Image 1 (cartoon, rainbow, N blue to C red):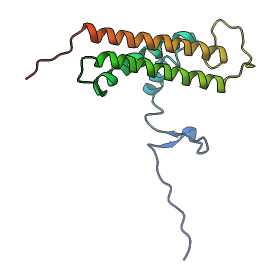
Image 2 (spheres, one colour):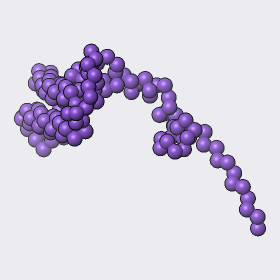
Image 3 (cartoon, rainbow, N blue to C red):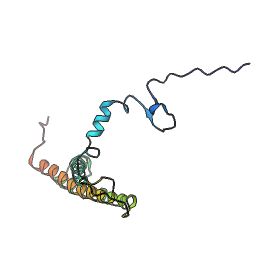
Image 4 (cartoon, rainbow, N blue to C red):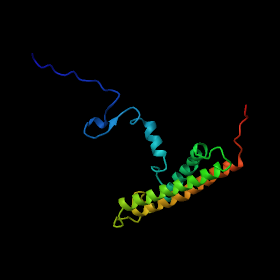
Length: 162
């Protein structure tokens, strides 16, 4: 019985990135599309021309604003009168925990002996840039949670009950 050549499998949808199977990344229609690349480039972490402090504020505001909802609507005190306040305190607590994690990550990853060039924009992934990002994150997180809490207190979201 003779060995037959294996037929070539046509993998036109998923293929190795750049045609190199040793890269460790598969090129799919989602990961290779221009729409995905444009979307990722518009995120604050990847935008050109933003200081690390401003990146942290942008990301912190979004986290603070959107973390309040699950604590208010899904928390153990969701049916009480203090649900908004308890959700706000829980959000602030989680922002503090996330900031502590950012501080620990920056301390472990970026050493103080990193050479920093004196350019007008501080690089996001240096010791100084990460400290600025972390500072912006906590300020933005508190601000976003405060805005969301104020909106919950001022705007009535009660719908007509049947």
